[in-house]
Image (spheres, rainbow, N blue to C red):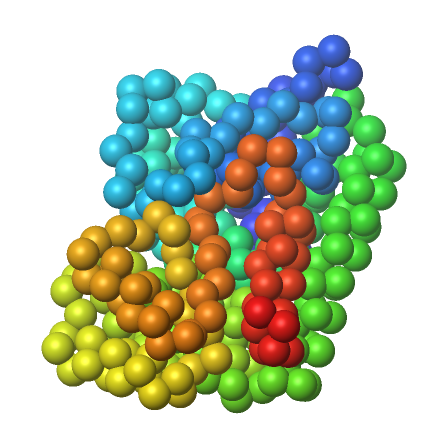
Length: 281
C-alpha cells in the first residue's frame, strides 16, 4: 500500500458482529467491491444505482448529502465524476477518494472502476482499512480479498489474450466509458476526441463528426461501443448509421445493476467484445 494512504484510513469506533460497519458510496460499483471484501461485517449504501442514467448529470438530493456526512466510511470516485460529493467529505479521515488513490490527472479517463489496476488497489486498501477495525473477521477479510483479486486476475488474463490476438484493432465509441479496459486489451479507439467531447457535454467539432461518420460508412472499425445512458438526436443518428452500415454495437453503461458484481459486469462486456472480435456477433 502506498505510504500516503496511511492518512486515508484512520481507526473508527469498533463495531461488533451485531452492528455491521456502515460504508457509504456514491457509485454502486465501489459498494459492491467493499461488500465483497468486508462480507457480513459491513453494510453498504450506494447513493446512485439507477442503470441507464448518466452520473455526470446527477443532481444530489438532501438525503444523499446527509448520508455522506453521517456515513462512518465513505467512498467516492472523484475525477470530476462525482465531485459534487467532495465538499461533504472534505477533511474527513474516514473516506476514500479513488481518484486521489489512483493519482488521476485532469484529461484522463474518469471511469476508474474499469481500470483493473485501480480496482485491485482499492480492494487491497479496503482490506487494510477493514483490518484496522476491531470486531471484524480478519481471516475472512483476507480470504475474501484473495478470492476477489483472483477474479481481477481472471479479467486481466482475458485482456491479455485479447491483446495477443486482436491488438491494434480499430474501434469507435460514443463515449469513452470502457476505454480503460479496451486500451488494456490493445484495441485502438479512433474517435477519442469525439468520445471525450460527448462525455464532457461539449459539441464535437465538425471534423471529428465527419471522421466518425466516415469510418463507420467504410466499416473501418470493428465495433461501436455505446453507453445506453447517452441520448441526443446526434447520437441517435449515429447509432442508426452504424446499424445501417453493419457495424456491430456493444453496450456498456456506467452504473452497476442491482444484484450484479463488478466481475460479472466486466466479464459480460468483455465477452460481448470478444464475440465481435472473433466474428461471432
